[in-house]
Structure formats: C-alpha cells, structure tokens
Length: 114
Image 1 (cartoon, rainbow, N blue to C red):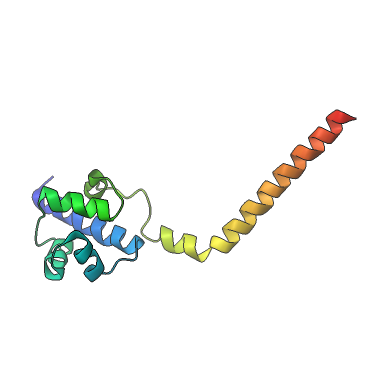
Image 2 (image 1 turned 90 degrees about the horizontal axis):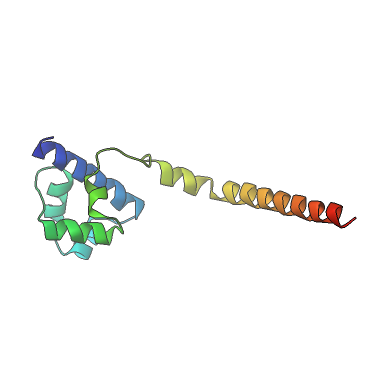
C-alpha cells in the first residue's frame, strides 16, 4: 500500500464519517482546529495529516484512529440514510415483535399455571 492509497482511504473515510455526523467542512475544521482549505486538501487526498491532527479527527468523529485508515467499509455509505428513512417502520416492527414475544411468554405462564 502506498502513501497515495492511504491518503485516498483517509480522505474517503473523513468525508463519509463527517457526513454521518452531519458536520460541514467548516464545522469540522473548527472542531479540530485546522483551516477549511487544509481540510479540503486532506479530503481531496492532496495533503497528509500529522498524528496529532489524525487523533483530533478521530476524537471529533467519535472514532478510533484506525477506523479512519481502514480500507474496507463495514457500513455502506447510504446506511444512515436508509435507517433514517425507515426509522418509524423499524420501531413499529420492533415494537410488534416485542409485543408478540411478551404475549407468547404470558400465554406460556398461563398454560403452566393451569
């Protein structure tokens, strides 16, 4: 793996995780105490970061440093959008499932008590 590969991975991950946290470049740059143009250069793979800045980035995104340098994506880029879109449906189904499990449990207790 080359430095260019690492830059590409880092830039993609920063953009992705910053997007998940709904942070603009300006907000994120301010949070980690760097300029917006420097952040833009990092996100475009033009600049590299110091270890201190890398740690600040990970902390600001509530991640471990290695997650910013991990090449594969465990969570698809659109996972957050999908979850937000279907949150109400997920809660409804989850609630119905829990309700059915609870009712089944109560019915089993009633059968044992007879």
